[in-house]
Image (cartoon, rainbow, N blue to C red; front, side, top):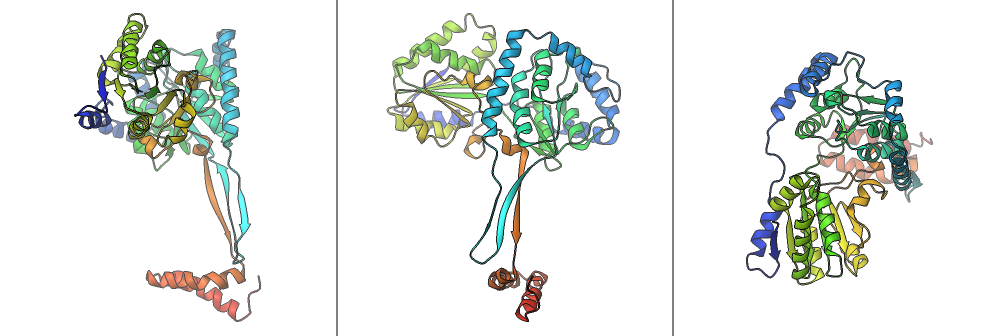
Length: 438
């Protein structure tokens, strides 16, 4: 069963600190193996990718034949039931509408010195999206990664979706088509990340890599960062639910299990001001675990990492939540809006009893690629801005340079950077002589 804590317990701080610092990721050191794979792909290109794909995915590929053909995608899409297609299209429409509002504006102005300043936003030229493969792959991940990239204006977008034993989820290919992504490579693992970062005979290198993966993929993303941009290194999923006694305990139990069924290392936490309600939710969890398809996974997650925390008031609830900085935060209280306004650290906030986190995984609109492992303290979920970069703009008139240039030269000399100072002073000298009006 989950652990029960109360802020009134004498040992609360010690137990809560242990909850904060519990390591949930698999403690497997794959960095050395991944470094070797990356070096191999950089040296041997397609041949290395083919070799690793045969070894790990039990799939024979040929150089130049990594991607699904149009006919293969057509055939897979044709097998998707109409109800599933309609659900994907609705999700894509809502996700696109939400992300279009994130597009930033360019700006340009003249300040009091006469200098013209500003910035402009441009999309990265190319991006590679990693989608875990096989029949257990998630088409929602395609939508959440590809749509922001398309909205940003990324011109070259490709997907890597491994197909172990040749197994393909048709919904993944349909999601790619709905998003307008034409190239889907059937490769995965660290070798796919290396191919995207450095290029092979078949795979063109990209500027940014996004998307979740296993320990090998996460390590590869860490190691290629700097050569390419990455979104984040995601850990096991997590949800924190703040709920009062006016909720249906079974609803809250299902919300907790919706996160727990992802992974045995996922974490589901309930914060409530009513200890009896917390016990009712735990009982509802036990009942649901008798019938859930993924009960083994969800039950292990709840037993190893789940928690019910009783607080004395909602001030304490917000403090607890901000210290945990959860990936997902559900607020199911009568004053949910007011509490949501006070939250400082959370990847995504779901407000009200009729807003389960699960809706955000699919059709809510906001992105479901979110910071985990308390990284919501300093980072945000995936957005259009992750596929864009800002370039600053400056233009000095002679008058503007005359006003602010001397200070710049003074600072350059203070740092013993003479050429910096002289590059400014030489222009000021010409301006002072009246020889430069441009």
